[in-house]
Length: 514
Image (cartoon, rainbow, N blue to C red; front, side, top):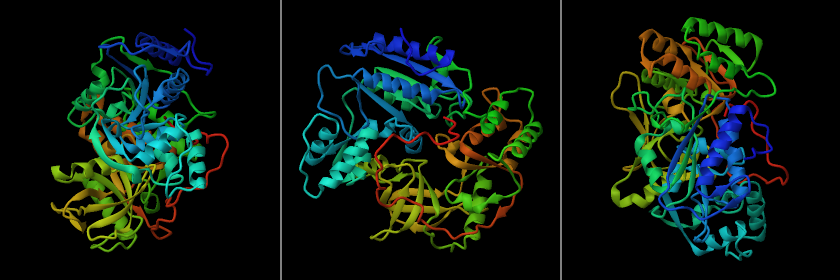
């Protein structure tokens, strides 16, 4: 079996061939670029595991390209072509919208698990546009959509195969959604990124839909809460876990990755690790030895902490630094979605909000009051259509107080906590260009002596926190806050579709740790 033209390391090439062999057993021949109808009753689950920088995302992307070249239809949950008896499908999934957006930036059409479990019911006009974009229909005439908007949508889709992304270049895809339903018919092949975040229930849901699943995950991350340190791929039988051991750096050594992988040394204690961080900061400006937390960075990338009490104190300090009143939010304040609080009779509304990216853990920026009492205008970070208006319950916790203050209170709707600081557990699956890690909390974890799956807890926390940084890591060593130099605002957030420049797809962001 031939490996792809891309230069792989030995472990990547072996993993590619192993996945290709299983795909062949399911009627998909990557070497020949051919398919046969899916065999009934056959099921497989594989895992590709490796630490940050081991090339998991690169391997996933190459497998996607191979499957697409073989004629596999990519299903995003946004549009599915007419079902054919011999149709073969691939869905690329992530637990959160932020994690899916990291893949989309690399040209891989990923979506959330939720968007696959629940499928939209579209208006006929949407179907016509989607069929045309997918190459199975003629150019439509749609009331309210100009030729320019259609051209923009087509140009976008030629670069990234995303129907809602294409429509966002001209018109909101959500305008065509008339309802939602739980998926009943099975799909085919599913790739799941950030699978360390999955619990058994989520895996069981996916198994109901996909006869073949390939899980991509990092065994050094934190296991889901309540999983006793075990991840879903840990329970797979021998031969079903493919390990990537070689670390692939960028053109130059990446000091952030170096620090992350130094944590694998059993002999390394906390103080010795901090000495490594300090030495890295002296040698490379991609690591910063910080004497205080920068309030200006907190507005778009939260400080990562271990203890909840630390999170609450930092949020209060952030709001005080910006002069935010106690009884209301300022436009530009960051939020974290804490779930949807709606009764069962509003199930369709819940599914709609979640499909738009308002799932638990989503990063959101407050834009201002909505047009109706209890509603807020929000920017969902990483979403293809980020602007949302939703009934909102926004809670701001205060030190030494059990009940949070609620400056924005709908009777029901999407619930939010403040997002200037988040726990490292909740940060999994997200990445930011610059990340501040609150080291005093990790020292406290080290002093506690706690372990997870035989690994000191502080090392797992540090590993996850460090690998959230794409470009620059700030290791904050003191419990101090530097005041912002500019006021909060929302001018940096995308409100209208950006002008589309035709040409080659953008390269991956520099220093990406995927």
